[in-house]
Image (cartoon, rainbow, N blue to C red; front, side, top):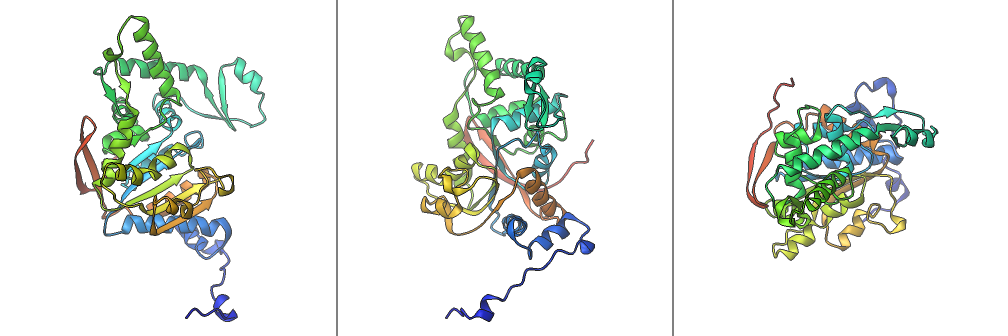
Length: 361
């Protein structure tokens, strides 16, 4: 029988944060666990992520990333989740991986005021992302470079995962998301790749080939349905999955629909066993980005007994704090890295090996 007495209900006190006792981010998140509002929500996200990492059943962890994360300075935070084996696959917007590639090529983001004169910026070929600037000429350079790389590939359909491996192999930057994903065989899927500068670069190749009188089967193209097929094979090959969402958008929906795609492939696996979201999107507008995990349970995308947590906090704050907590607790240690092998979109094997970090050069 549930005890609904007043003393029972008023049983768990909020503990005030004592900054004199806090030295590390781990200390801060631990203090957040007994605080309230979004600090406690963020601590709950960190704890659910921690549980997924420590689960002896070794869930396959997929991270969905969206929003201006590279402009926000989170590039190395994201690449470290790969290096330290905190994620097994990534679903990203095209903008994030493109701007990672841009940085790897020596082009950077610059601070500005959000009140800067945008007409003046346009005249200077400078693009603004809220309080951050980037050189539009660098975009043109990298768009063309991506088209040239694609032109060297065997003429056939490629999943976005395959093409991200190609781009990662062209990068020599230890802090790059694409480079580390290529190095450690962490697949990156970009299901809305057309909606990005990568798509612009590939459209440039498309235009060039057709202008030269080439037929469609004479150059590479992105086979977007292979993304669905490849990601779902990873779910089918593992006992359970965990979803870590930074923002929402296409990456969130793409990861959410893995269960439905597995059903379509007549290999039902159930929904995710863990789910975490750091977001500023709220549910009352009815969109996927803000929908709750309870709503997702009505679709079967999240298991009924799943551990879930949501923090309504901007990602440049929330993600760095959550990842710092995990790194400072060494939660990645003792966890094996999963390395998939592919043959033209078919998952051949999913090998497990201890996480070993090479000395950074």
